[in-house]
Image (tube, rainbow, N blue to C red; front, top):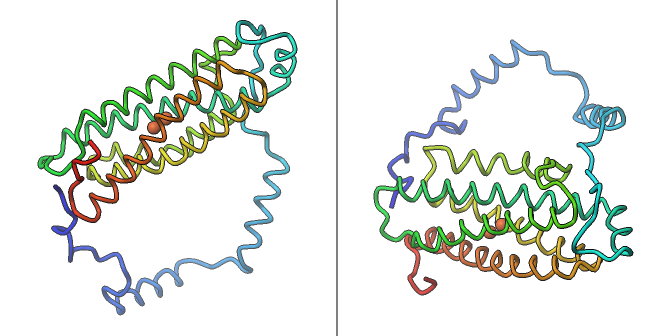
Length: 246
Ligand SMILES: [Fe+2]
Ligand SMILES: [Fe+2]
């Protein structure tokens, strides 16, 4: 496995590397810039001003026609329930990103010269296929409800922006398999929490078929989370994963 040990000693980013050089840098910065008066409260006030003037992050497309899953009473609730459609849109976006993250993790595995001690590729590929399955399932539920799975809802947009860092880390050719796996762990933590909320929202609306499908997805997501968490722990502690889990 790759380690970061080979790079020890060449990192000079900390100021303690050379106090004298650090003082010169500080002096140079002070001579070239004029610090604004006051503290960060002015920044806070500006944020509030922008919030008062700004638009919201998009809007929720409400289905034009509702079909399939609903009674007319449920239909009325759903048409006014922007939260559910917003969060369903978010799950579609998130599972799409999840699929891409695992796809990139597989490349990271293939590009690692010494694969000894890494988790087995079959399990990683299984998780990848399950993310794709969840994406398709969520999109299908959206269509059954008369919604458009390609529409960008506010929460889908926000999830996409927030997840950009994860995508960047795993696709960065310099990062190791473990660094990428740790990034997947962050995504899985969020993923599990969001499926839980979506199940509650669907149950609140009486969408039984959706609750059943989402619960199956959450069971698989829960396995992703515990497995990835365990792998991350073992790779950090021992440099290899135990074969007991696989
Ligand atoms: Fe997922
Ligand atoms: Fe997952």
